[in-house]
Length: 301
Image 1 (cartoon, one colour):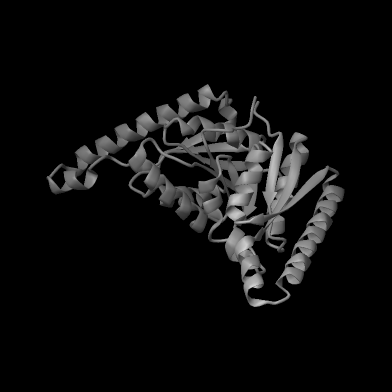
Image 2 (tube, one colour):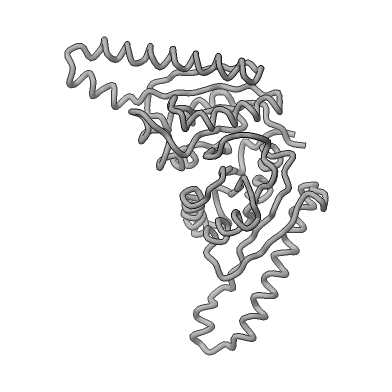
């Protein structure tokens, strides 16, 4: 069984970001993993203070000291609530870069961040730019929007049969070890539109779709077997004729999932661009937490 040993939680110290910290703490407690809270003071904002205020250095010092104090207080509250040791790191720089750097420095198995934020640093760390942390980091990233009341119970795992698919299942098992896994592969017949224009009958096209679904079902079963999933812990769905992000978001609702797991890349350079777009759309349109896996630095066995 895969496990998590080190968790880094990015926070802008806002109330919405607390959801990510709470989820990170729950995961750290369940796995007896270390937890480090990270807040990055944006260097460009500090530079603006120096530029416009004669007392910029005093204001800068006050801001940094306030951040450090609030981060210590949050770490203390989280540690007491979950009965775990919590470290904290207040750093200065470009927040996206700093979160990724701390994750690498601590050899984190998982970076946890929010998808909403507040306060003066909102646009720099949490919110619409959260996916940029995913692009920057080589570590799996869990993007939290739900309140963490319980362990994940039903995870929708998007698989494309690339080498990243195995990593997605491994990270899903680490982050949601008690969940039922709904394995999804969105099936689209290659050049279906062109075949329709060329006069291929709907009956023939439906046979192609059926064959593609059957092949996908076999592939999902093979991946489940390779990952050691017992039959009672997974099911498979293969929606057709939908953009991948639309199929994923639709099935999140229909399957009543509280976590979506999607890979960072696809099977080739063209698909990597598509999957990046798919991942962004899933982040934007889904209502549950999203876990983005990579093929490197997955939790060890």
